[in-house]
Amino acid sequence: PTREEITYFGAGPALLPTDVLQNAAQALLDFNNTGLGIAEHSHRSELATNVINEAKADLATYLDIPTDEYEILFMQGGGSGEFSATVYNLVGAWVTRRKQDLLRQWGTSADEKGLAVEEKLEAELRKAVEEDLKLDYIVTGGWSQKAHAEAVRLLGPERVNLVADARTINGGKFGKIPDEKDWTLSRDPALVYYCDNETVDGVEFPAFPASLAPRADGSGPIVVADMSSNILSRRIPVRNFSIIFFGAQKNLGSTGITVAVIKKSLLPPTTPQPEPALLRKLGLPIGPIVLSYETIAKNNSLYNTLSIFDVYIAGQVLKKLLRTFPDKVDGQQAVAEKKASLIYSALEAHPDVYRIVPDASARSRMNICFRVTKGSDVDASEKAFLKEGTARGLTGLKGHRSVGGIRASNYNSIPLEGAEKLAAFITEFAKA
Ligand code: PLP
Image (cartoon, rainbow, N blue to C red):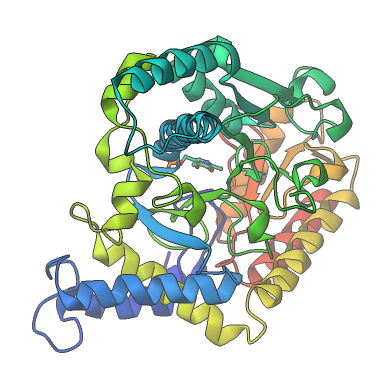
């Protein structure tokens, strides 16, 4: 089949806009009449810096990120790399804050501290780490589960607090978001982590969790969110977060870069990372330099070789979004909601044929997970659904291997007509 004949509902890497790819194909051969392709130019060139700075500026415009308060970083290592990066960096920030608190209490500045103070400081910090260092995770699906597992792997189970596990309220399966009044946060956690949209399980937070919001005086928990599979699809209250991260390969662009949006107060000069020697003495892990937000920020994402081609694609997607939606992310949000509602309505109209997997209160607009329960053999019905869908050019609908079923990934690049085609097929398949 040709590209035009297909609507691809795969979960990621996802469909990219055809015109973006056409421009990219040309840019690979000859970027801006330089005779060299975008993937051949040095990442240290002015041209590469411009690509990075424009993509950052367009992302900030589209999502209303206050750039005086937040830094935008292009990283490598994927969403999974950020599971580790958030731990390393925010444990470091926690140690720095404790150290600063102690020095403030003792009235000694970091520069003029003598050997005795240093020893006392180490002893106090060791005690603090032993008694008080905790990372809080809210687990609502396969990806936050993996992030939680990574924190446990790096720090040990005693330092990681499982705030809530959605499986405990839903018969052992993901599909609901536990009530916030049942969340027990630690006293001063290094981070509170959640995944805004669970790609595998089709669970999305309907809104920012109210109990994590900053207090009137501006203080509040250090909130980290994985938005890999719903970024750019709805407005986010950026100031409620300390770190938002997302892999590019769903709503932003091609596989190969990951974005971290980080509050500047977590970076130097306010919060420098502790010296590796101190972390070693405290028995805490020292992260790879390429996952250090401080290092990547200091180098405007060019500490080491970055795929400028992937940043370029992301930049082109953002420019297209800004052209298409004068009201920026709000415009895209309205379309995303409309598309999701078309598909869910078609499914709901035939409860004898389809079962939507997650609870109605937590249904994702991006990854629509359902079972085809028509007939006695679900497996055969789902196979038939996939086969007939493919014949109509509706592809990539197979659910994640860990949960089975059907998953329609309704990312930004799926046009309204694509969602309409799928809704029509859902209806016709039910009637057949
Ligand atoms: N987080 C979410 C929500 C995802 O959907 C994925 C991948 O699909 C990841 C993290 C992991 O991303 P990566 O494969 O880039 O490590």
